[in-house]
Image 1 (cartoon, helix red, strand yellow):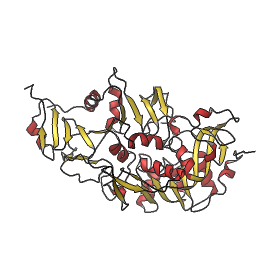
Image 2 (cartoon, rainbow over the protein chains, first blue to last red):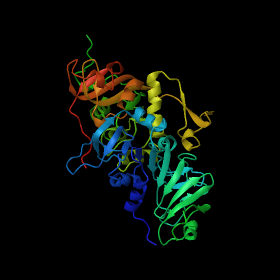
Image 3 (spheres, rainbow over the protein chains, first blue to last red):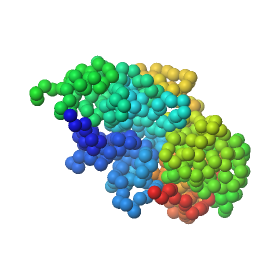
Image 4 (cartoon, rainbow over the protein chains, first blue to last red):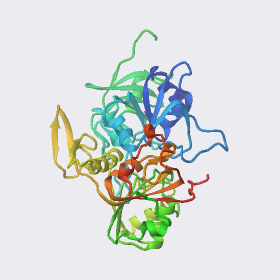
Length: 218
Length: 227
């Protein structure tokens, strides 16, 4: 079994983003999806700080610190892009205009509850940013994360133990081991990496996992 | 004749009172009105409530205001950053009060203040710690949380160009919260890089009409960090 690299995960997410989609990529791992979007599709990236039509990072020396993304890294603008203020930017999310947001997560429950903003530890400084708005606002909320923590603890769980970002918002999870749909019947594995059995994946999943793979390939 | 241009930045902030609620534009360092914040530090007002997306970067701007112990409370969406050590230290020492607000609520609560909206219901944050004890309501089958406006006594914002009527245009993502904050404060003070004649701005593309702006001061833009 060879776990997917971060680049492979990004490429797998990008493959599911259709032509013409308006997409917000969360900070951290999801940001990598921007680098691997299929060239034959027009996909418009939204950044919460007021830009539709975000382009890739500028060449070294070409940074403009008035032109940044949600992670506060310098980016570029593509032809056709638009700038707008924060209330408009969040109206795009909260008003249901964004097709997809891709977020990182600490935990996702089998009901699609998301925990990705706060570990709940007493000395942690809470910081939520736009995560709660994105999670409830986009038409589809996808999660991109490692299947288990560095210590092997479950991240796909029956109930989130960390404070919630939003309830019942996640529809699909892309991990380094599998693609999992969140349905009314809970987690359903749609794809599993080569060399990993469904039973092994189930053991690394902290809730009931169903097998939703098409069985045309052995 | 209307002339909102103030000759000195000291004069622009001279009447800010102790205990004020101050809306400070910027997302990270983009759009942060560094000159106005420095002038506020020199002016000396204290016991302030600051409303801004972040809680300061490095030791400049808001971080410098915090370090000078002028801020009683900060209302923001994302205080914790890689370079927010000034805020982190004050928070852990219990020397500053923090209200974390989802970023969309932060913007919309100020928009509501500026638009005369008494309160609004929104799904963001329902079922989370940040909904607190506020009233909830099911609207069209969906859970919503009641949110109240955030009014400012003063807004400190940065724009690119202005005219003497206070019309403002911005530069790229440095716009962020500034147009919303301008509507939500009793006194909006803008620092700008350039002042143009009346008619020098395209009226089809003025994000902040001058009715929302009381004072404009021209300064050399202190641009964001260099990596």
